Length: 261
Image (cartoon, rainbow, N blue to C red; front, side, top):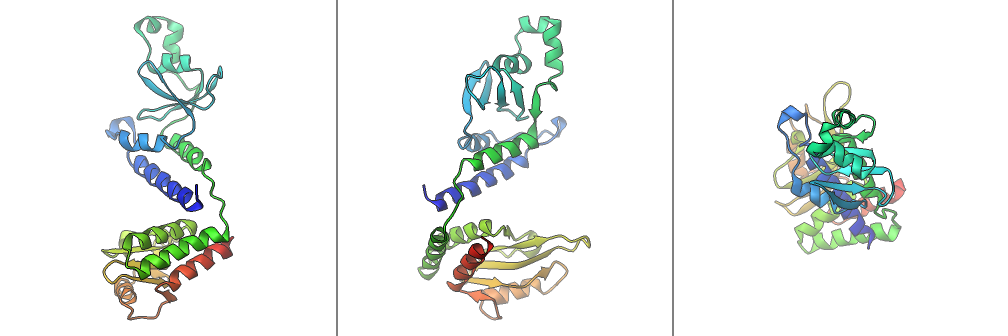
């Protein structure tokens, strides 16, 4: 599998994790994890899937007496114990609940719980991404740049967007927050919220689906700057000076990635 394919998988994993994270909350919040998205994420999870009673479990080491076990439900609890113990605590039979010893286990599972909810989701994310080969060569980065340039020159918007998204991930650029977003524009940049609380955004790269233009601005915009949208619109229309425009933007992004190492 190519480096680009692995990077796309990483981005997809992160997207699903972010989606699931927004639906995790206290018991009384009424929030429920989207099971369809969760199951899509688990397709990348390497632990062994098994069914025990009405529980869907993922075992880190199948066949081991004790191992880390993820229960696929709204709590995303990860235990370190046996499958039988998890079944007792999460889905006990009436006969099992009669036992005082079992009742204590059912009511208090702190002795075997490793993590829950957001902490477990972070573990799942790390394990899924850890399965991907994300080491790259200069040729891998050049391939992404060349595909982006060809897409731009051929008017293939989806190809430009994909290459731009890949470079944004490599350079840790965030999608433009609402305070800097333009409709029908893909914008990525460095987002900062200093102690003053005034959000800044930039340097940034912007692809306009309106003008089919690609630009890179080596500026830092402030959320207090009332002219920031005018500056972005002017850059997308080629009416202001920019650090790079057109296919040269992908060459600039490639050099930034390679120089960062």
